[in-house]
Image (cartoon, rainbow, N blue to C red; front, side, top):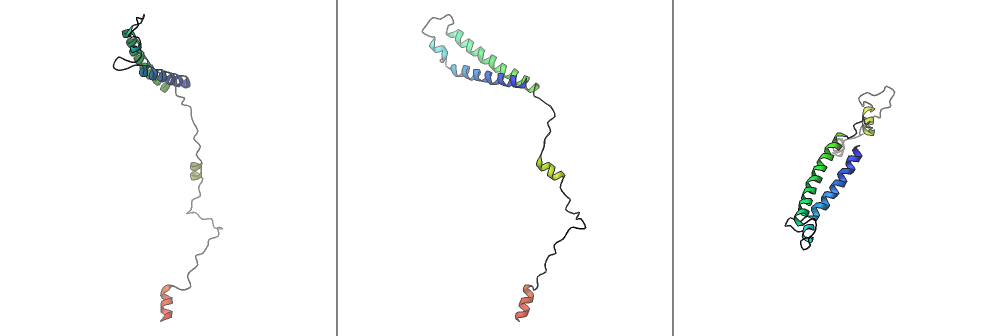
Amino acid sequence: MFIVFSVLIVITSIFLILIVLVQNSKGGGLASNFAGSNQVMGVRKTTDFLEKATWYLAIGIVVFSLAASLTIPSGEVKKESKILDKVENAVDPSVIPPNMPVQEVAQPTSTTEEKEEEKK
């Protein structure tokens, strides 16, 4: 149902864009094309229709958005994270097994101070 409302929102938005582009704030737009001819729907009725269509489409977008938010699928989603698995299964570095070989740090044979003393 969420997908249906999402599609309706997109279609309504496209119609709203087209209706707004047809209008002209100074009385032009589609209404100005009918100014010279005498139609069943006159200039005033065309602008009224475009204004009402704009309001209805805007209200439709709001209603469809609210309906879509109510129908968002909220099933339990299992989030699998490889990083989280590695953190949970990490070995504690403070615990060293007794049979673990440990590398000894080699001590320097002579320090720089000893070398200076030898030179004297």
